[in-house]
Image (cartoon, rainbow, N blue to C red; front, side, top):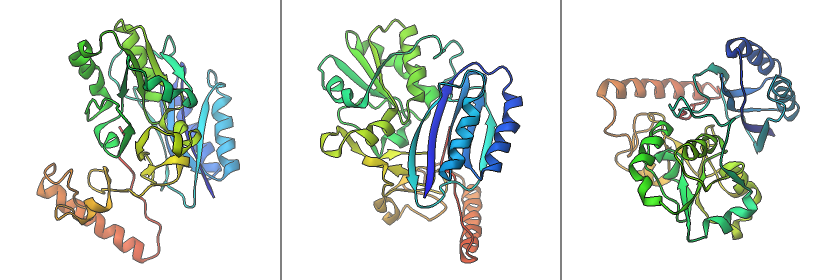
Length: 304
């Protein structure tokens, strides 16, 4: 059984470049795979491996200055969901593009999964999904506002265009694991919105702790690994990933005449050139050949 750990933590990192090789080494030593992003504002990522290996890597991270309080969320899979380990340096661990946003200074009020239903059922609460359009497309909370954004960096502009619609409302926001809401709630507070809340631990914690028969979640939750989506109890869902655009695709999408395995899906059929398509087809051919040789094949999901 493979342990999958989703984690993030905002803290001041004086020299991210110095931390990167040490993190890569500790992951390699323990056979851990996945993706970690490091920036001056902290760390973010998802890693997978044997339970004791994950424990060792998380212990190393928590031993660094400012990271003792790092929390993570665990789920499990029968097979390794990542092909390799990547440790990257970034300007931001989740890209919003607003220089003054600082989650270490102030964020909205955390709401435990067990209390979330009561909050979002209140008439004076506007529930806003801060995730990207392709994530919202396969699942969200009933009645939630979908900003219809391609990237989290589009959220501030969306808010500025729509903020008057939410005057007098309390704002409740949510995302996959909680990290985007650390920034979005700080941003709204800086814009003069006083009553701002966010789901503690994100959708993943809600799906882990709230029974399906009491849930207000509708659909699946997109995740950035080989599982593509999870449902209640964090059980892997029915979605696959388009190898061209990395969006989640259903059985119906794959049955569409607009779907070509490895080259396009109904969502991206008009987004790429024929040169791109030829490259995608060749990549799929190489993946098929590798699979025929019995090699384990991974295609990384889209991550911004």
